[in-house]
Image 1 (spheres, rainbow, N blue to C red):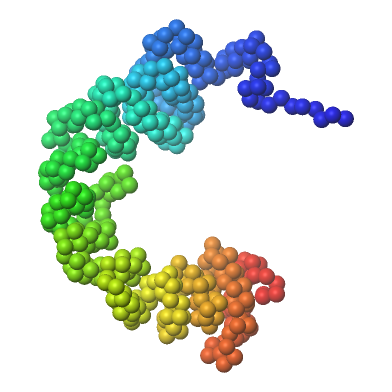
Image 2 (image 1 turned 120 degrees about the vertical axis):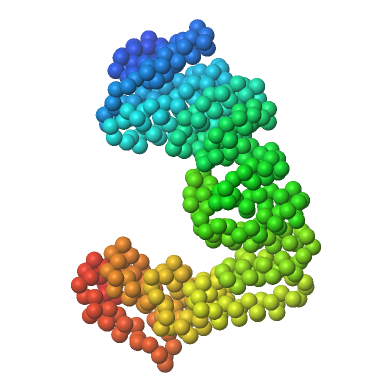
Length: 469
C-alpha cells in the first residue's frame, strides 16, 4: 500500500488550498486575533500608499499614548501579543517600503515603555521582552538608513533619551551611537552639547558624546569631556588607551598612572556600576607596560609585567614577559618565575598556575608538601588539578580527590553529590597505581571510614556504584 502523502504547513502546502479558502481562514481568524487583524489592515493600507500604512500605525500608537487605565496581569499578556504584532507591522510592512517612516514609528513605540510601566499592576517580563527585542531590531533598522534619514530621526532619538530617567534605554542609545553616519552623529552631538551642562550628575548626554568621540577617533574631544567629570566618574584606562593608540604615549603614561579613587561610577557592560580600585587593574598594568615599551623604556615595561605576574601568577602575563626577553634569557627567567610560584603563600594560585603551564611535577610536589593545608571549598582549583595529576602522580591526585569528597560530605552539599560520586570513582580507578609504602590510608580504609561517618547521607550513596559502596 502506497504511503499517504501529507501536506506541509509551508508555502507549497498552503498554495494547494487555493486563494478563496485562504481568504476565508484569514478573515475568520482575524476576527478573534487583534494582532493578525492589524497586520492585515496594515498590509492592505500599504497597497494604497506607505503614508496610509503609517497612518494606521500612528493611530494605534496614539491610542496607547493616550491610554490611562491600569493594566492587569491578564491584560499585560494580551498587550504583549498586540505589541508584538504592531512591531512586526512597523518592521516588516512599513519598513519594507519606507525605512525612515518605520524608524520614526519604532522610536515612538519604544517611548511607550515609560507610560506602560506607570500603568502596570504587576511587572510583566513577557511585555518587556517585546520592547527589548524591538530595541535590537531598531538599531539595525536605523543603522541601515541613509545619513540624511538618520539625521532627521535625531530629534526623536534625543526625545527618547531625555525621557529615560532610569537608564532603561541606555544600552539602546549606546548601540545606536556606535553605527550612526558621521553627519548624523554630528547632528546628535550638537544637540547633546546644548544639554550636557544641565546633566552634570547623569550618565546621559556626556556618555553619548564621549561614545561618539570614541567612534570617530576624536581623542581631544573625548579628553575634554573626561576632564569635566568628577574624579570618581573618570575612566582613566579608556583615556590612556585612546592616547596610546593615537601615538601620544607620554600623555597616555600620565593618565594610566593616575591612581583610581576607592570607588568609581563607571559603565560596565552597558550598566552603570560602582567599582573599586582593583577594577581592571590587570588591564591597567599591561597597558602601562605597552606604553613604556613604546617610549623605548623596555626595562621599565618588563618590571611592570614582572610585578603583575609575581602578584597574580597569571600564565598569560608570564608568556608576555618571556616573549620580550633577549635570546636565551628566558630559561633563567622562567626558573626564577617557577621559584616565585612554588615558594609563595598562595598555594591555590600556585597550583592553578603549575597545572595550566604545565609543570605537573612541580604541581605534585606542591600538593604533597602542603598535604594538610588543602581545603575542599576551592573545588574550582582542586578538581582540575586532581584530574591532571591522576596519571602523572596518583598519590597527589588521591590527596586532592579525598579532600574534595570529604568536604562535600562533611558540609552535606547535596548539589555537589554528583561530583563527589565522580571523585570516588576516580579514586577507585587510580588506587591500584598508588605506591606500596603508603603514607596515607588505603583506598579501602578511606572508603570504609566515609561509610561509617556519613552513613546517613543516603542520597549520596545512591549515586555511588554498587561495587564502590
